[in-house]
Amino acid sequence: MFKYLITISPLGFMYGSSGGFLSPENLVGRSGAKFPPEAATLSGLFFSTNKVKSYISPKELSDNLFVAGPFWAKSDDPEYFYVPIPWHKILAKKGVDEWEIKSGKWDRESEDLDPEYSWQTVNSWNNSPAVIKKNGDVFETPWKYVPILHPKTKDDERCTLAEDGLFLENAVQMDDECCLVYLSTHRLADGWYRFGGENHLVEINSIELPDDSPIAQLLRQPIQRSFALITPGIWGSNKFSFRYPKNEDFSKKRPEMLTDKPISYRYRAKGQMGRGRYAVPPGTVYLLREPLDKTWWEFPEDWFPKEGFSLKQVGCGLCLPIEIQGVE
Image (cartoon, rainbow, N blue to C red; front, side, top):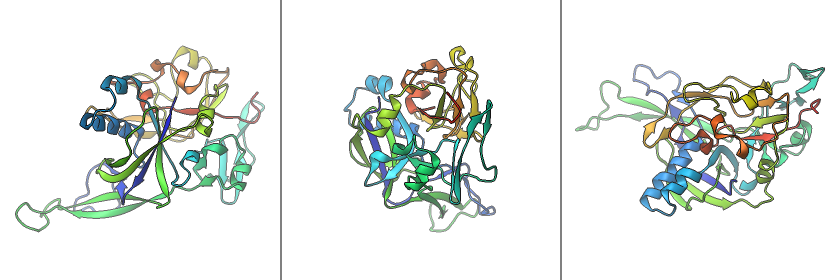
């Protein structure tokens, strides 16, 4: 089980861009943005830190380190962090709605209401959309992108290069009262670290999870017929990415889904860039014909790709049970 919350508080800006730099002739728009960093980034920090000052055996980390995220929290209350809202719950500023099963089909009251909130507190996971909104347990994204134009100067002069002399970084500014949160099986020593693609400074703290914390209780509940992802889901073999595990035990349950378009997913392992994949986005809802009767911890490793290590170890497909009206 996950035993720690790893909180990451930026000391200034953080990294938020991916893709090629913009040239001086092409400064329209911004490069592709991806934030927060995936759990694989935190996993890599464990290994690199352990090389500098070994406090856990390398084999223990390789075999037993599991991390998951990203999430975020108010800095003064990290145990009640925010997770992606499942797609069957629709929360907007002007109202709420909920997908349910009627006569064997997905149905909802209002087709005109679009979700405007994407995060809810983990302790409100089982509440209805109306209760979640009434209690103020929803929030919009607590960070914003801030484009910063950097000059690339000549080696012998303080002058910008004639060609490709400028590039745009999509820095990210988080709310001062918020921090990123990841789940981990191991503690990372508290302190200041370089974290993310541009090695911005962050402050990291490890907080032990009590047995009665909301996330620990939810992760102990076996999934029956319905569940929702709270991290990106990557299923299948090393060559293909699927929308759900192709294992016979899972496939025969014929899952139905509420989801959005796939998202890109890429990570570094042992200093090398892993092959790019598409992932099922967090919030995706799965409805099965038969009960699964397993927790995420009990999902077989062959449901996940393995490239040097199982992607289950970086929290892929972490999910929690949900209740859908009309499903027995």
